[in-house]
Image (cartoon, rainbow, N blue to C red; front, side):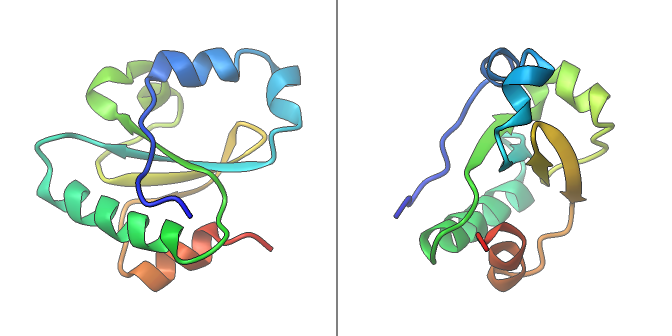
Length: 111
């Protein structure tokens, strides 16, 4: 089980999803947007770590929104923390309020 959430850059994510064809078969994934000085982001990330380690969930990666202007503007992210669930590279759910580990696990669990 994964105990931490891997970080990626906006450039890495965009490179992996640069065409509709490459995103078409990707299925579900999620991105956690944060800033390094945000206390609420640190708490939300810790809750995500617990949810991820609790059982099979969709892949979760994190991106610092300060270095992600393209995705921030494309998806109109207005604040952090923000968890976006993607299907084939397109947002299907965007959450700003992460109330509990149970909520996060429910949003991310497989099946």
